[in-house]
Length: 465
Image (cartoon, rainbow, N blue to C red; front, side):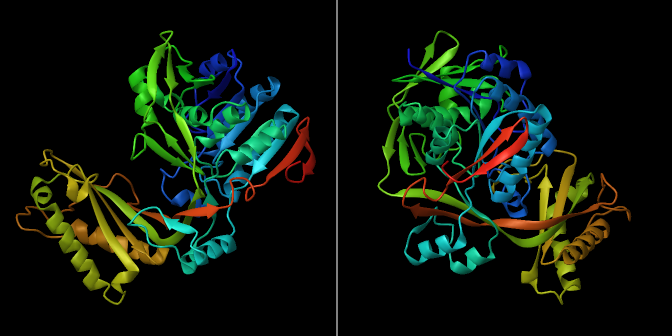
């Protein structure tokens, strides 16, 4: 029977996975080892600051098992959204780790690299020619000024460049920002399988064993494509896939559970069926891939907007807790009066009361029932020095603020750390979170190759070798 299997080691490169689960997957002779390495879940900071979601040590630990085993067995290894945010600096950071592993193990490899940064001139031209679209009513229209103030801007690419790298004979493919399922779907489409099934399977595999019970991103799963369906199974005997767990994960992070929009296509799942297959695997049928009339990709860009300093404290006094928000307003007003020479648009003071409404804020419905509250407050300002100074003033004002019913003259807050004030550094926002219409999914994202012999780089080839 014609089939194509993909091993997903974990839901995020660097999260880790049981070695035995991974080896169980290798024993099933997969056609590719594919792992996602990025997300916007962590917010705009990683893209703006050019840093990874996980540590170098963690990524190296995972790849030190994945890469040697993949090369030894001639199984392509594909990494998507390298470094967490997928910009050039993130891709290069990942490449350093890959090259270090190749050198350590003296491995031969053909390495493909796909950068997904988009030149700002292309985006400005798209603005001028109405090829930039908003992703929602609460996202402002993109302007040239915003583009200029933004650092790296990346695109979520589809499967096309990854297929090009597979055609080029790459052993390892390191991609910039990708639409998460695309790196999985590329393998199936390259092997001639239905793109709808390939993308749906990729959507489930991208998070590792989160589609199982008990679910986790820190374990391995295997997906297998057939002519008219695909199956998902776990590789750890303590986890099991069932119809509910796999179907539920299909709808994970989706506004519409039946229609997914990807780069250049729509995935229609309205006629999908989920059935148990041999008691261990779930079989899925009915996923439909519909090419879009326009090829549209998502852009992501981040810019620095402030500096942050914050303090974590705790309140145990029931009288203070009963009037906490009132006291915080009093503290903020006192600080603003003290620093009145600083324009209010140059800074912000925020309070988060964990135990009362720190998570839900004004949307919290439950009445407070407790004896202590963690208070986190922050100062956001144009410079780190200003943020430090404002936060220190908030802290000292809060610490000694008087209130009706107070019975002591000691401090109002208990601090878990000394020093209490924590300078965070730059704060970023997503300034580009828009859609871009492009001619096709491949021409803007060329593939470059590097070859290694016994861990030493022997050739850096041109694109599309």
